[in-house]
Image 1 (cartoon, one colour):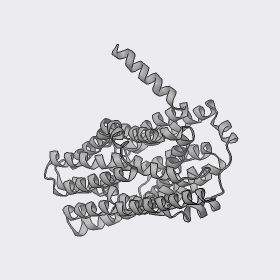
Image 2: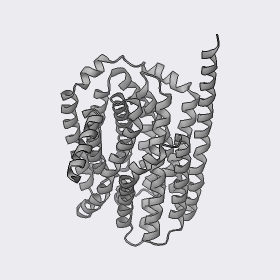
Image 3: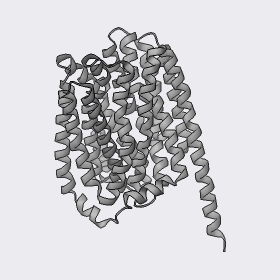
Image 4: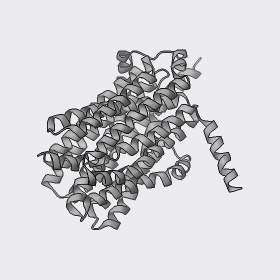
Length: 415
């Protein structure tokens, strides 16, 4: 009986979404498992293979986010105009080359260049894959799709860091080589599936999106979008400490720090996988703004926990609290942007979210400087205040949106 109910649920789930949506979800699991074998350890890898100090390591890694800040909008807008398929496949193929480059490079300049290309490929892939999922999903189901995609990311991340630690113990280049190979396999299989399910034909039937220049003008003049992006930048400054400076802080403060950080990354991902669906159902009763407010509050509490943890148990509990904020903020941010994206510009608006990566560039650099000149407690307490301040911008954007909606309704009912 239990197996029968499980089968019925899986069958209904498969029928609810387009096959390409399912393939992107599965591909996301594999791709994120691969990248999380290598990227969380890049700061440690650079510290052992170059003479860079923590601030410069943060600068090199953050350069990828700087490239993705611009690249996401360009990739999203181009996908509106020329189709999701070409941009998606090109980004994945480039990603495979990037991780091969990380494995073979031995100079700071090359690491910097590949970090830029990594950010560019990520910024093309992420908004275009989200836009394609939204294209193929009814509007009322998109929040669930965004949540499922986020959960798929973390299913991959839940196993990647532990595998990365095992492979790195054998050879520090192995995680990067495996990541490159998996991305290449993914792009080949996705090419077959996109052709098999007729995405090229579907794109041909859809109306072309606006040109890059007109999409830029429209997005630039959208005041609500600008406030949302400012909120995303501030949020990213705080969040980026977890992916860069936290690894250096943990390695320096705790015994077996590399192993502890790998466990922390897996706890982060496992928490998302376990709690994403129940928390998504719980937040359906609230607006995206309320959900974001709760989420950044958990970010702040998690950062305070990092600052004052003295052992494995307390820092792992802090990671769980921090992760609750992650679960709540990411899908809600996507919903905010989806609500204001005009028809034919969904890719551009999703891509515009990548301007929030300015925070992922600024954050590691500032965090590295603070780690040099101050202790880790000062760094993470400061980031707790930064996280809370993001809600000011999200709330300002919502206020402008409400005023615009009221004006539009007033004009509509006037004779």
